[in-house]
Image 1 (cartoon, helix red, strand yellow):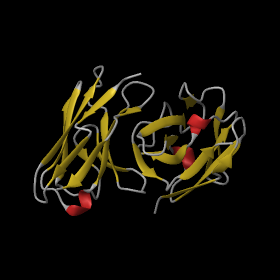
Image 2 (image 1 turned 90 degrees about the vertical axis):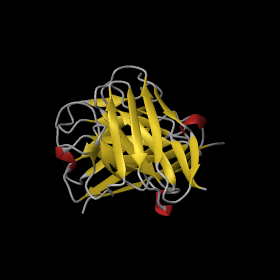
Image 3 (image 1 turned 120 degrees about the horizontal axis):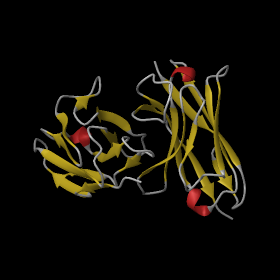
Length: 124
Length: 107
């Protein structure tokens, strides 16, 4: 059974940093593109970052480029999102999600499994 | 970025009613359009991929159609468990983008 479990969220001051983790089971993240999507309180879904199945390419929304970094650890089957210089507008639930198709190149496309999300609150 | 415009933003219907949601893309996205269901406090769930393909395990009362810039999502007979917000998402052009969502409620 495919499962994705996020952790690492919390309260952080503006300008601070957090590292989110997404532990995957039931499949190997080395075979699929993976994605982070966020949802601000009461708002819609916003794609944040992705990594290709081969990990040769990483992708970022303009709003987080230069501040966030996506990576993965194949040995632990875990996806990460390093978030620096956090702003109030980064406050959201952060979901990790798996791509539906085992295509090793290109950005994520169709998200068939999602974690339960982890809440990041940026506030002084 | 491709703008995805969903309408209506909310609707209220009775159990057993048919419900249709529209998603309009700002550019041609061929068939590369997905639909997700998000129940309150839960993660989104994939229902329809590539405009019209039903994801495994999803009830047949859900359907999707369309291509190019205009897409529709239909619930043929609304059930109480279908109370949720529905999102369209395109992936033809990087970055993937989502519609603003349609909140479905029971009348």
